Image (cartoon, rainbow, N blue to C red; front, side):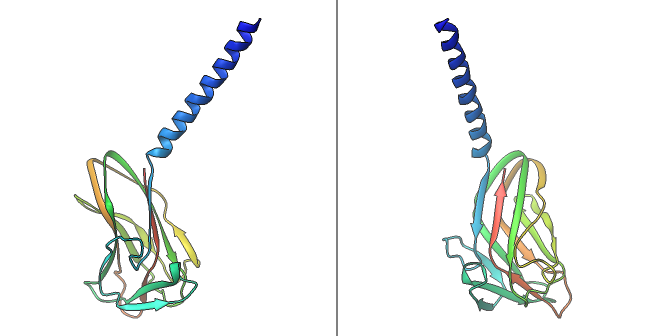
Length: 172
C-alpha cells in the first residue's frame, strides 16, 4: 500500500518537473529588447535627421525625437545586439507614441536582416493611441536570420511629423 502511494507521488513530482522544464525551454527561447530613442541603455542607435529633440514627462523615459516628413533620406534605427536564428523567426514590435506632434499617417517599421529589410508594418501615428502600439507578430522564414536593428522611415509627403521614442522588440 505504501509503495503505491509513493509511486503516485513520484509520478506527480516527475510530471511537475517535466512540465516545468518544458515551460522553461519555451520561455528561454524568447528574447526581448526595450530600447529608448536616446540610447540611455547603452545601445548605439543611429539616425539621419530626427534633429528635433523633445522633453516631456509623458514621453517614454521623458524624451523623444521628431522628423518632418517628405525628406527621402531620413531614418531612425534602434540598434540591438545581433540576433541570429535559423529557420522560422517570430518578431513582435511595440512602439511608444504619446505626443500630438507625431502625425505621420504611414510611419514604416522594418527589421534589418542580412538579406534585407523585413516589413513589420505601417502605423498611423496621428490616430495611434497614446502609449504602446503593438504590431501583430510577423513570421519570417530563412535558412539563417541575422538581425541587428529596427528601422523607422516615412513615405509620407511633407506636412507631417514622424515620432521616434521607445520600442520593444521580441524575438522567438
